[in-house]
Length: 622
Ligand code: GCB
Image 1 (cartoon, helix red, strand yellow):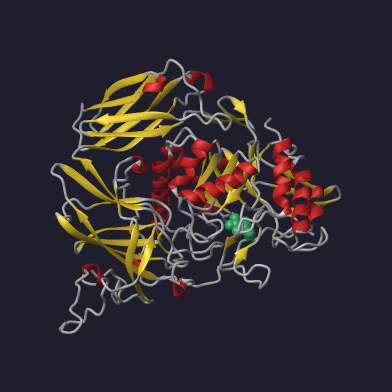
Image 2 (cartoon, rainbow, N blue to C red):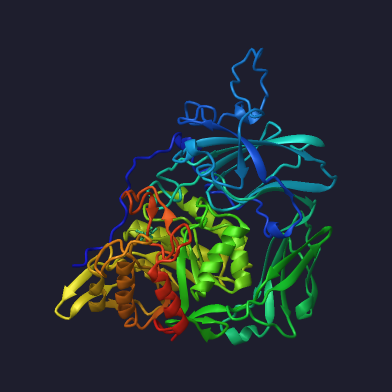
């Protein structure tokens, strides 16, 4: 019998200390956020950082009312331990070090399960140059960050998976400088995600940290894409978008050059610093999985210049079809967490991206859902180069405080950060605003507004979300599943998660299910079963590789009967750490629904997908 769909119950009360520390970005317009930092010359601050643990209730960071203390470790006072008259009982200089980027959990065994505050510190040499701005760029820090440079409080940030830039120009001095960052990974009921998650809450400075120096007027944001008119053919090699220049007076020239496409044009900024452009190329090779063509795009304004690698393509929905460059496509994909293959821990490196995309290519995939939060930018870069299409999502997962305006403000902020960073990536074809949320009017209003906000920020890409439900109805003819979630009407593409054969019913129940969906493209955005690599048995024996295959085979029967399915996204490419997966010997702290184990060993289900995708035997593009 198929049970109604489930949401993982929240197992904890709020773990957050100090509610006033929350919502540091809430209701603010997007601050300076530099696009294309990985294509600029920067001063890397990656490497060894000293660290001190500020065990809950984190009294070095928060005062008794939960307010951030400004006169604490951020001062990095180098107390004279033998004679200090005050109580600065900390010392970064002699403290151990952690590698940045990297989570703290897999670097220090005593911090493996630690969720709380860790203080990071490092010295660096710097020579400020006149007429420049310098930003401290942090690729991601999970979950809240508080930054001091040379004892000056510089900025705060909330959100564990998006980049932020803090201006440090006036805080820097010639020669020796230091930066202190307190990172708090404590979960919070009003956070995004909230407290109940099915992935490991890796804390720390998990992505690259650098100093970026730009001239007084500088390009912070740009958008260069194929014109997205009412039809694909309307574009006809026309590129459009904008280049935004900070500090530019109206009429400041901006040059856009794409030598390979014979484009060399100069446009001018308006009063808001943005220079819109529309330019026709003589000939353009469009980006596609078969030919992931990227162009060198050179942008310049005044003293500032940068070059990015950008592909051009059109993605749109037409009835129940998804069209890439005017042609119907079927997405053969997999879900993937930002979990490092082989070494485990939060993924961030070139090596991690290479391993993950290696698996996808071997599987004959053309698509990946990077769940449930924006991954390291290296992933989208590699997707651009390898021709793998991407679903990118903010960490709005299951239980969220949908009734709170400040949480909505936080969600729009994160959405903005995600879209800002990756809007120039041709591989990203879908923005997702959520995963598996309870169907009620408060949530539907929140998410509908958020989907519309995503559309406003980027009208060129379809908006999606992974929906869980509906409730099955058993009839004489079989089992009926009717997706009548009102939120679906706010989406261009419906993501449907379902676990028939694992959480719900038996694998063969899938054969009897008749799905009804609104008239839109549907991606089966999650389906699957757990199997421990190397455990074998009959097709009905749970935890075996054979049962995982059996579940998928029955799913294929079901999916082939749903006319508007336009993609398969099995859950999940690789086993990943999760604190809620605690069956000894089988799970040992890992969600085992991977097609591959965390140490890179393929399960039989991987071979099944490899063949299915090669033969294109499940699903149709139209
Ligand atoms: C889901 C969630 C995903 C979980 C998965 C599971 O529906 O979207 O985050 O990890 O189920 O394995 O239960």
